[in-house]
Amino acid sequence: MALAFWRGWSVRARLLSIIIVPVAYMFVTFVAYAWQSRLTEVREELAERGPLVAKVVADSSEYSISLGKLDELRSSVSRMMQSDSSIHKVELFDKARKPLLQVASRSGGQPEPNYYETPILRRLVWMNMQSLAPGPEGMTVETVGHVRVTMSSTAMLRKQTGRFCFALLVASLGLLVCALLAWHLAKQFSHSLNASIRALREADAEKRRLIRKVNSAVEEERKSIALEIHDELNATLIAVRLESQRVVDLSRKLEQGPEAQEIAARAQGVIQLALGLYNSGRALVRRLRPEVLEMLGLQGALEEMVRHYDRAGAGCRFEFQAEGDFSKLDSAVAISAYRTVQEALSNVVKHARATRVTVSLRQAAGPQGSTLLIEVADNGKGYDPAQASPGIGIIGMRERADAFGGSLAIATGHQGTTIAIRLPLGM
Image 1 (cartoon, one colour):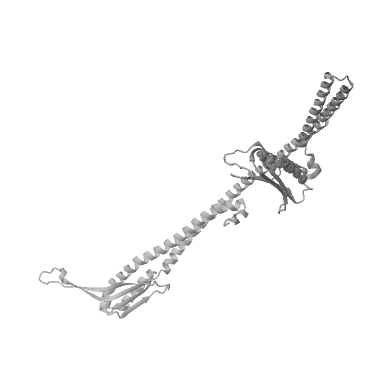
Image 2: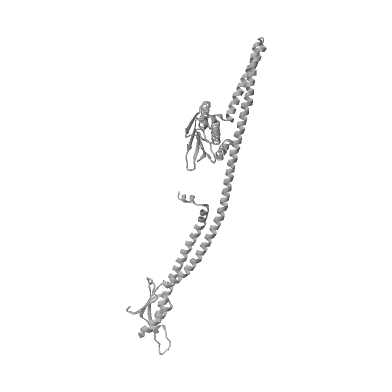
């Protein structure tokens, strides 16, 4: 459900998304990592430079503060700030933390929230005039003031931003090249795939046409055989009956005796055999050429078929349900549906051991035209599709459905089997 939008995409769009999305994700990750690396580099450099600047100013301020030469110290600090744009402000305090000097950068920029402070130390060395050698006890360290340095990352960030933009431009060019290559590959693959799909569709359409042609040829051959049986065999059987009846009539004019009675009996037997063979021929003709389909249509023919099975089936009830108008069905579709139901009911009688069978026929309308829906359901023993291979009958039913672009679905298990046939009828 979450990927329902994916179904409306073309093959090229899907391929492009498969290629571009990971590359774009890597690009965004690279850009974010590069920017964070630049920020981290700036922060680390400021953290190293701030204490160093404070110490340099503190070391160079000892003499100026001691002598009160603050103007020289201001000039020196100003030159330092001009050479280092990352210094935002330098403040000097005496040992009582009273402000002595404050020099701010003229370049502006945003100051950092924290600052770096270092004491200004004055070291006094005294010498022992007797030994003329200074010792550890001859040095005095005194705090005469404090230096406070505030840094600014604006200039450094501006410099790093320039480098980052250059890296971003190079990465964007790489992403564009990848996108162009992906578009070209997707285009070529889409063309190849569409050509393969068209070939498969043409092959499938050719297969359907061939199946319909074979089924039509089979039906025509069945019709031809039925006509030959009806015209030749049945006519011969009628002649045999007439000749046998003539033999019976002549035997009655002969002198009655055992021979005459035997002749009449045997002729009567020939009549009965010819009659039975004639009935068998009629039944075979009806199976080969369902005349009832031409006379009653699909609904009437199926209803008659189900009624015949219901009369003949001992211990099993057959029911028929129909919904819709089937009088305008194409003859090829009608005979395919008739043969499919005929094969399904034959399989039920042979294998299902069912006590109830229902055949339903209905016509459903859809956006691409109406569809003929046939369902044959029984409450028999069923079977395991994973262990039972489809027989010739099921294969034939599936091929008949495929020939018209339809489908055949079988739902079965440990109890009951349902065969659903769908045959598109067009607009």
